Image (tube, rainbow, N blue to C red; front, side, top):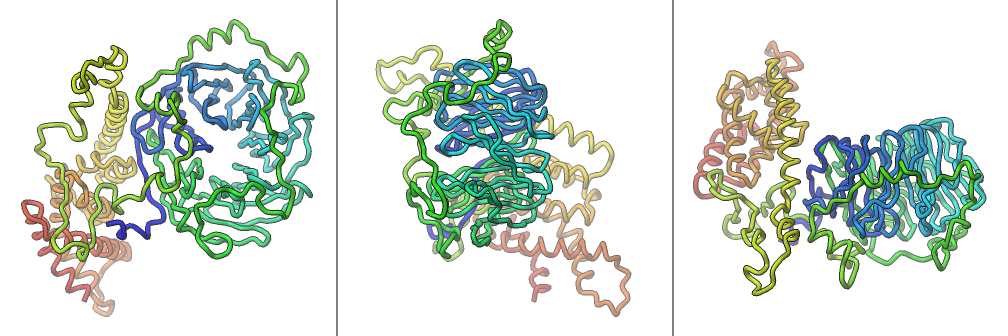
Length: 624
């Protein structure tokens, strides 16, 4: 089977419900690529392990939606900014609130931790940038230079500079120790949404809504490269060795070089509004969110072209990078105190108040998954959030679809075994009774404490409650549209929700009333039927087969006659109807291949697919 997916370059890793209301922001731990923080309109911050479905910790304390979130370099702390302008910093290893900071007058839009010292920079819709001393709980400096919202902040790898980008189309470079502006770049013509420092050289990359990525030499303070792309970039990240720049847009990942400007590769990735990217060894991880859901995607960088015309090789990052310009000099020890950063006046500094203490007491860090928490944040021998060895991280999936992998007919001499979950099952799928028993039940005299036993029993419960709550909201929204009588709009809404169970519920209703089927409805639902036919759930397969059968019986004669009719016959067919027939024909072609593959199965499923194959027989003659 390994050879069947050897050519896969990108794939979706997982999708899960992250919050009880819409997700508003997320961030990857850049050091490991294994930790994920999400912020939501429910005012919570949730911590997850990438490729794990259960929430590790839930952090509360904000009274307004969380707008921005960021890990520190060691991934021991996470900071979150809210819609009201307040900041909170949690200590993840101690599972407690560390600091509550206030001073901004509008939404927090950007955050970045200093790479060595205990400092945090924040940008806001109020146009100000503040640098905070997390240990002493005070604002050590406020930068006031942007004329519009600050969209992104980044400390340089050596911690001496802070770069800021904003809606005013400018990029500003600040000297952290002197507390003043070094230079300003103004070549962009629209909001600058993302900036990244080169890992080794004095080089800065920026991405803007003007659909360009620009590169800036930080020795000569001039632009050395600019590429135009569509759609506009949403994320950029340098390769660890500094040899190229990866840019994430809504439909792809692009690999760029500079001096001269060129694009080495374009990898199609369906991650949509990708919100953050990180590299772990030879894999690039990208994250996007929609409504209450978060999706993660992987790109295998060993299959991506880069400078020299070769694919990326999984090697260790070069410590010096290129020799074209200066490299950063990183300190041998961490910053020892706030004297490394220019202090503001006494009026700018802020000491803890009784109000702050009250806010901190009201904040909490609830451990949702004790096993993952102890494994990641309190390991005995090694920190499991550290990058794993190459090859151990996120193997490629066994199939192209969401549910199953189907080998080609030549892979085996006999039809491949397919594990279908029956619709008449009497027990839950994916639950092991042993998981709910104390260790003493099967390991001798050892007995779990009450808290650990409850943690095991509750494992996954909160995630399931959030998922069911989200599904109920979606069903209520669909029900409201259904009342208008617009079946197509109702199904389109269900498809956009990305919840296949709701699509199945609607199709089961429409299948009972064939009169509801229209040609434009077929164009929307045929791609969904293709996914249902390949599902591991028997009920989904049955619904897909029934819907396809009704479509073939009701519309195949119309589609066939429309496509066969020559223009000279004067058939009165509108251009719109012709396009619908062509779209259905193209989708039925794909479905024909799926049906043909599954018609060799035995049992009830095999019979259903054999019947569909007979109904599609005229389709084959039309192809010829």
